[in-house]
Image (cartoon, rainbow, N blue to C red; front, side, top):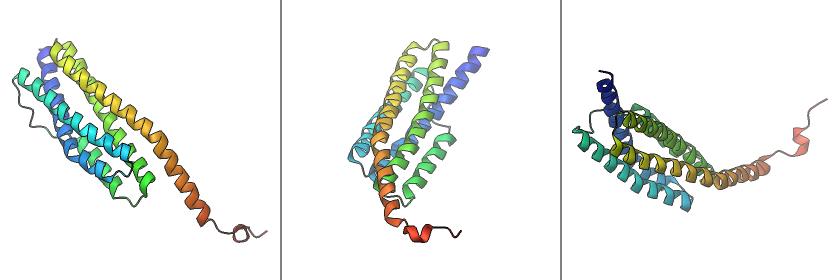
Length: 182
C-alpha cells in the first residue's frame, strides 16, 4: 500500500517537473534576449539545449512507467517565471539588469535542484535504477548551471556595483547643500 502511494507521489512530482521544464523551454529564450552580457546570454542558450534534454529524459521515464507526462501545472515554476518576466521589464541598465536576471535564474535552478533531488530519492526507494541514473544526470546539470550563474554573478554584480557607484557620484549634491543647519 505505501509503495503504491509513493509511486503515485513519484509520478505526480515527475509531472510537476515535466511541466516546469516545458515552461522553461519557453522562458529561457526571453532571458537570453534580455541579457546584455554575451557570456550570460550564451549560458541561457546552452541551458535551453540542456532543458530540452531534461524534457526528453523525463519523457523516457514516463514511457518506462507507462504514464503520460501531462496533466499537472507547476504553479511554483509559473510563479518563478512570472517574477523573472517582471524583472526583465524593470528599467535597469545593462549590468544591473543582468544581475537581476541572474538572481531570478538562480531561484529557478534552486527550485529544480530541490525537485530533482526529491524525485531521485523516490526513484531510489522504488528501485527504479534506470530512472535514478537519468534523474541524477539532470540534477548534476542543474547544479552546474547554478554554479556557472554564481561565477558569472561575481563579475556582473561587481560591474553593477561599479556602475551604481559611478552613477551615485555624479548625482551627489555639493557639500554646501548637504551640510545641516546647526
